[in-house]
Length: 304
Ligand code: ASP
Image (cartoon, protein in one colour):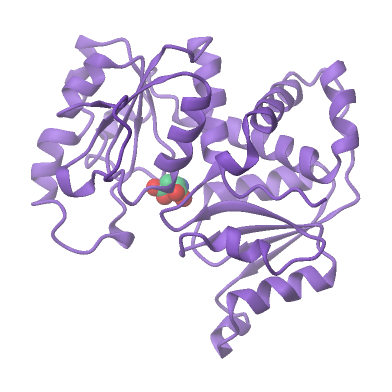
């Protein structure tokens, strides 16, 4: 059966654990990496730097044939639908289609139109971004040692964030205590009662072992959801002076709106894990590609 990677719940705890274990094994380089005789399409209907380059590097390092589809310059401009594009890539014989799309649910939707290709969600609208959650958790495990019982605060534009949805699903599987902090109109409804509501960035920093800062998603925002950037910054931005009251580490999936959700001076601060997250992203994506495209290699890599 084709094993799609559409979201954290769909992938399940065991598979996520296995991907993290594989990512660590790959990073330790205690074995030779397999060469995958597979074809991978990067179907990016929405802009991306980190995720696209990271998947591309991961697939090339594993010896895959990698081709990139971008909506601009394709038949999308002649009115071709997403479904037809996916059907076409599947019929060409790609083994995996890595999809990034502005529509929430696009990856699940794409999975309906393939016979053989595995669909990998590289971020769909406000819905999910599973590899970002996996690399976030790998980074937290690296630095904190364990996640169970640790306090992880997620601060920023939670409403429009697919990273938020994937992160809370995976952090919960790992037994983290989750805190949230966002302006009222950027706070999702129907959050579970066991999630701590934190009134501002200063309290989130003081409460947490780790803070995941999320970008204000201006491209998904109808106007007027925050009174002004100055107002947002005053209350919800993670600032240099917050460091004194906490030992919390700082993560951000990027791209950062510097001096909006996070002080520019914190981006390269020793408490910031942003570059480590990027590096871990390549490991996690290599692990996911091996696990999806060459499951027979998994046991061997893990046993070394
Ligand atoms: N890069 C992440 C994403 O694609 C976060 C962001 O764009 O704010 O969702």
